[in-house]
Image (cartoon, rainbow, N blue to C red; front, side):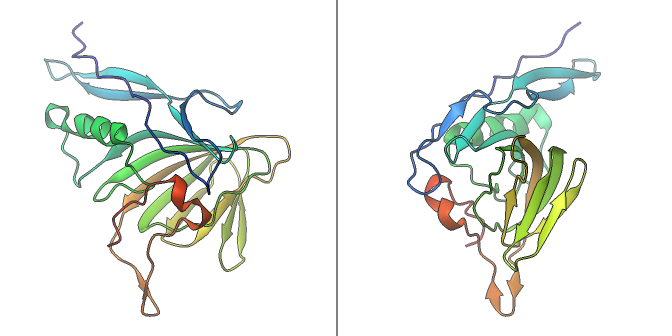
Length: 213
């Protein structure tokens, strides 16, 4: 059976060292003891039948002294996405290999899995985006800048609407995992103030998204 051309596998990102987010950032193997991740890309054969064109193992970018890691499963750069001639896949590969992808992809979406070490809390941050955050394994505490906290378990979903927040793994001995889908959104104004992207202490380690100018 003809399965179409094999799509180029995800390549490691080139990222620069940071003073704030971690003493080391790298792309490579998974650091948690959670199940490994594979992304499956579907498409069509010459007869128009649906096929799995390619599978891509996760490629992790590690932060905060190996206490947090990102895997970008996919990203789009326009809405609606253009799937003709694999235009979306080609754009995804280009964006990923550039090393310039921030938390949000302007005019598009990002699907990202994040692993959190036991007891770890990431930096307080905000993006100009509408995000769906789904707990996959373990428990995660959503922490807001108002001081409000919400404990979430597997299957729980946070709809993050451009607020200042952080994520904490409350377990003392187990890794936790979330998957996020981040969507670019219109500028948000609250009390006359524009809610711009803010990475807090992590600014030096992660590119700004560039969608809030």
